[in-house]
Every structure is written in structure tokens, then in C-alpha cells.
Length: 258
Ligand code: UDP
Image (cartoon, rainbow, N blue to C red; front, side, top):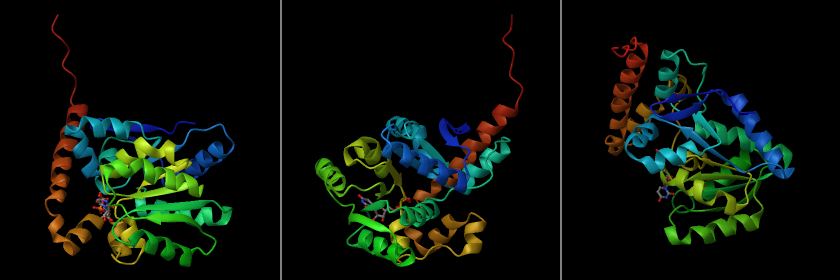
């Protein structure tokens, strides 16, 4: 069944909380395994991605093809609430990926880790395996391969028989890679998870729980990695665009003159 969704600045956001999203993704996996479902491309959509989609039409279309478009950031959640939308919580990529690994560990389905620098993907897989000993690691590789090598990478993943593919290439690269190559990998589900491997590997600390609850991971990250300030200019830009959209939706429409 298609989840309820709403449009924010031309991007679809599905009104699914964490538990509902996990349930829908597990159902998608079951459908593929039963031979009557298409592989599912999952996006956890954030403010930066929505701002990019305003001027990058290819990226906007890529996002539109995702089976699930889940609300990753506080800005998207607040914009939804201001418009009276049904969304009540975020589905943060790191949390979603970890919860799926926990549940797949119990089912015996395997996970492939693609992305990040050096041996971070492998370290992320090992970190999760320590937390969830039943987790089947199908394989891992870094995210610094050439564009022309993509099919070879996808074939390598296919050979492992992985069920879930976590892709940490940063946005928009990871969404575009999944959109293009998911079928080739043979995986039932793929999710773009940004900097999640850096966190799972323990090499980058996750924002403390209180900061996460307030939706301030972006501020924590800015303090830890001040060189990201330019990217984070997307946030005030998003606030401006979203406020303009909310106001124009609230204003009465002008009737055309007869
Ligand atoms: N990365 C990669 N290949 C690339 C570019 C980036 O594997 O060509 C990795 C990078 O090492 C990092 C992750 O992608 O681990 C991107 O993290 P970031 O936090 O920048 O992603 P975001 O979620 O902010 O887009």
C-alpha cells in the first residue's frame, strides 16, 4: 500500500515514522524474496537535498523515483507540521540503517556496505556486527571508485547475494547511484545513508541524545566540522523557501477577473 505523503517545495515526503518505515521496508524485502516485488530505493530526505532539487532537475527526478522518501531533518518535519501535515517524527538515516541491521540480523538476511573512505565501510560493518552478532555481512567497499567502475561494483555486490545495500557516498551521488544501479546489484532494498559509516565505525561521534531529540545534529556537526559551513547555508535558504511556500498556501487565492 502507498503511504500518505505530501509535497514540500516540489519534493515528495512520505508520512511514515520510524516503526512504520521499518515495517514497510521489511515488507518490500519479503515481496522481492517472494518474487512479486520490485527492489525498493529508499531516500531519507533532508533540507539540503530539497534545496538542491530546486535547481537540479535531474536530482529532483531521481528523488521522485524513490519508493520511500522519509523525513530525515527537523526542518522538513517543522515545515510539514506548519502545513498541518500528518508527519510526527523524523526517520534519521543512521537510526533507520541501524534498526534494519538489528532486525535483519534476526532474519539471517545479509547487508552490503558501500561507501566512505579507506576501510571505514568495513569498520562500520564490524561495529554493527559487534552490536548485533547475528548480522550477516555480505561485503563492503569504499566509495571512491570511478564512475566507469560502477557496473563492476554493482556486479560484485550482486555476487554476494546481499538483501540490503547501504550506500554512503554523500548526496546527491548516493541517490543517483542507487537509482541507476539498484537493479544490477540484485539487492531488495538500497538506502542512501550519507555519513552513517563514519558514525557506525566509531570514527565520528554521533550528536549526543539531547541534541538529536532537539533535531540539532546539523549544529553539532557544524561545531565539529566547521569547514561544512558553506553546505549548511542550505538551511537558511530552506527556511526562506519553505516559509514562502507555507505563506502562499495560506493566502486566499485571487479569483481571475471575469
Ligand atoms: N564519500 C564517498 N565517495 C565520494 C564522496 C563521499 O564514499 O565520492 C563518502 C564520504 O567519505 C563520507 C560520506 O560519503 O563518508 C558523505 O558523508 P556526508 O556526511 O558528507 O554526507 P551527507 O549525508 O552530508 O550528504
